[in-house]
Every structure is written in structure tokens, then in C-alpha cells.
Image 1: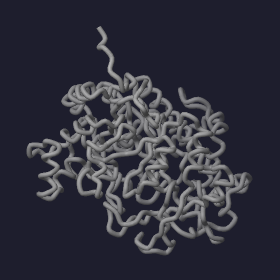
Image 2 (image 1 turned 180 degrees about the vertical axis):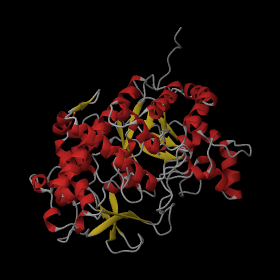
Image 3 (image 1 turned 60 degrees about the vertical axis):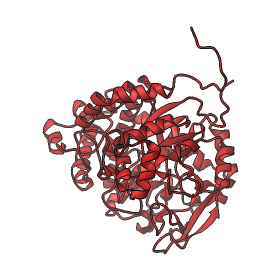
Image 4 (image 1 turned 90 degrees about the vertical axis):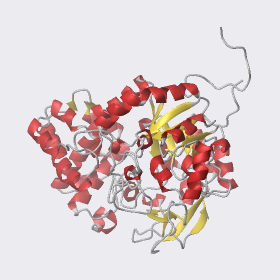
Amino acid sequence: MSTNSTTWLTRRAAGVLAHVSSLPGEYGIGNLGDGARSFVDFLAESSVRYWQICPLGPTGYGDSPYQLFSADAGNPYFIDLGELASAGLLEAGELAAARDAAGERVDYGLLYERFWPLLARAHDRFAAAGRDSVSGYGSLARFSRVHARWLEPFADFMALKAHFGGYPWTVWPRPYRRWSPGLHRTLPGPVRREAARHRFYQYVFFAQWSRLRAYAAKHGVAIIGDVPIFVALDSADTWRNRAVFRLDAADRPKAVAGVPPDYYSALGQLWGNPLYDWRYLARTRYAWWIQRLRAAFELYDVVRLDHFRGFDTYWEIPADAADARGGVWRKGPGRPFFKAVQAALPGARIIAEDLGYIGPDVVALRRAAGLPGMKVLQFAYGHDANNANLPHFCPPDSVTYTGTHDNLTARGWLESLSPEAAARVDAYFQLGGSRSAWPVIRAALATVSRLAVVPIQDLLDRPAEATLNRPGTVEGNWQWRFTAVDLAALRAEKAAALREWIQLYDRAGDREIRDYSEPPKA
């Protein structure tokens, strides 16, 4: 009999959190090419079984992967331009102008200026040659048919957005404020040509992602992807599916999403996303959400469901509020939603991001849905009255992190503590006065949580400057990267130690955990 488990987590394993934008790459941002494969090689050498990433979609203002132009599309910035050159669609001199020698931070303004003209050039050469495929990528026509549900609306959305100077769809001329199946035929010629480019970009992205995911699987590495609970107002999702959201007759949100004052901000967080019309979704048996999750599982092996507590209760903020303090709690869809998901997607492996100040109702919903929750070691002391994130409180049906994309690096956290807190943390984690992340990493691996995940910044032992995102701020986020030199040094100096700890704490993911004693094998 296996250890009692209410979730799909039945084996102990380790993972590393590294968003694609942070990977090594030559063209100003991490991509799906050689740098990603080298990272997978490191994970496999270290006996790491999971690679966790942030959402893969195309980002808008602020560059956050949690505010996307589409929940289905991929981010064209992640395309490996070198493969397009190998296919004869770009020239060596054109690539040289796009190369970023430093590669330590993403300059999104420079990326915008350099990347899009190159992608457009690649498409135009592809189209001018009358081609239907790039070698190894399959047929563009077939890709367009398979992804027709979202691809044409998204391509039209992006083309119209460019046509109207980047303004959100809510202020476009009225003929274009409503998507319909026949809209594409009515678009001006230049807009249709731009839409064709965006279909091509998605074709290339999905082909490269499919190859990378297959490479990871071949090396025993599964992908944990992230599904944000909310979508952006200025997105193809909202433009196409207005009935799903609580919008008024002028297409403005009746109220918006966020969270109340918390660990990250005394003003709370005003996300600004439109809220769902859960009554409408219930009448449709949550079809929109189920389709969204089904598409996510075509990309990932495991899904981390962001802001899980919003399915129990969500923070509703007046649409004209200056910050999040004036919101109120509203009841979410609860257990019926997860019953519908389980019926439609049996066996789906989902992690519930149940962080923040949550009560017993949220815990009960997570357990009823059979989902593991999250623990963050940086929240171990002083974060909540129960110190529920201390390692000795982590339950087996959980995923323990040293930190997430929203936390300081572990070293940065240790260096930021007050003397009193530092003394307590030092004693617990046996730091011996050090501020290195590695004792905290070892503590995460030693927990009884079935899965332990470590951000790449912590493996590299980087200070606070390497933090990927600081909630409540809008500048300087999502820019940090590590280089090929960093990765080579990590493989040479730390892979063996990480592999040893993973073996020591039974995190190789190669056996079911048993809760009874039996004689050792001869």
C-alpha cells in the first residue's frame, strides 16, 4: 500500500524554477534554442525531474507574463532566430544586429525595436517563396487548422492593435470592437497581411516549443507551466469572449481583480484584470475554463493554477479605485468548478498556488479537489501567526519552494532580515553566520513535501539584485537573466552536490513512497 495521498503527488522529486526569458540566449532574451537545451542537460545531470516556468504567452505593457495578450498564444520573443537563419529565412548579417553580447538583463525597449522587424522579414521571405513549411516544423496550413479556435482571433487582434497604434480594443472603432467569425474577411489588406505574420510566428513558436518539450521528456524532465487565474482586459481572450467577463455596455470592467494589503504591499495589489461572470460560466458548465486548461495541458505536463484562493473567494475592487484597499471578498465558483474540471480532464496534474492569508475554507477546497498546495520557506517566520511554512509543518501533499518568482532571492532575503529575525532563521537553518542560499535549499529538499522546487537564482546563490519580480512595482521586473557562462559554472561546481542531496533525500522521482517497513533488498 502506498503512502496515503489525496493528490497526484506520489513520488518525491525536485524541480527548478527558471522562466524562459531568463535563459541564456544570443538575441536579448532567453529562447527555445541551445540555451534551453543546455539547461535541460543540467537538470538531467543533477537528477532534477521538473522544470517550472512562468506563463509562455505574449506580454503587454510592463512585460509581465501574468498580463498577456492571449492565454493560448506563445511569446514570439522566445523564438530562436538562429533556427530561422538555418532555414534560409534570415541572413547572418541580420542576426548580428540582434545579438546581445551582455545577456544579463532583458532590455524590452531595444528588443521591441530589433526583434519584430526580423520576424516580419522571416515571414515575408517564407510567404514570397510560396512555402507551407519550415523543415522539421510541419505544415503551416495544418497548424492553422488544428489551432483555428484561437489562432485567427488572436492574429486579427494583434494586427488590429498595431493598426490602431497599440491602443486597447476597448477604444477601437465600433466595427472592430466585437469579434465575429466573419471579421477577418472585412479587414483592410494591410491588417490581413499583418495577421498572416502573427499566424506564422505562432507556427514557429509552437514547433520550437514542441521540440524542446520532447527533448526535456527524453531526458526525464517534465514541464510545470503556469495558468494565471485572470486574463488581461486588453487581450484577445476578453475581446473574443465578452460574455465570460463582467463588462458594462461600454466594454469597461464593472469591477477589477487584485488582493488586499499583504506581505508584499500595504496598499494591496491592484491588478486591474476584469472579473469573471461565474454565473454565466456555471450555466455553460465552465466550458471556457475547461478549454483553457485543456490547451495548457497540450503545452505542459503539470499546471500550477495561480491564485487558487480566488476560486473560493476573490477580492473585488471598484473599477475606479486608486489602490486595492477598498475591495470586498466575493464568493468564487468553489467545488462545482473543480468537479467539472475533473470530469473533463481526468488525471490532470495541477498544483494549487494557495499562498497568502487563507482560511480553512480554501484548504478544504484544495483538499476536496485533490490538489497539492504550496509552501515557501521565506514565509517560515513572521509571515503568518501559525508559521505554516516552516519545514517541520510541510505536509507530504505539498510543493515546497525556497522562494517564487515574486520573492527576493534566498540570499537577498537572508541579507534583508532584521538582526532578531536573522538570529532565529540562522539557528533554524543552521547557517553558521552564512547568508548563502544553499543551506535553505538543503532544508527544502529535506522536507516531507513530495516536490521541492528551487529558483535558478538560488542555485546560483545570487543577491537581491537577481530578483525576477517585485509585486506592487511596475519597473525593472522580468528582466533578470543568467548566462551560458553562469550555467557552465553551475554544472561544473554544483551539479554533483545537488545530485547527491537529491539522492540523499529520495528525490530522484524513481519510486513510489511506501508507508510501511519491509526488509531491505539483497
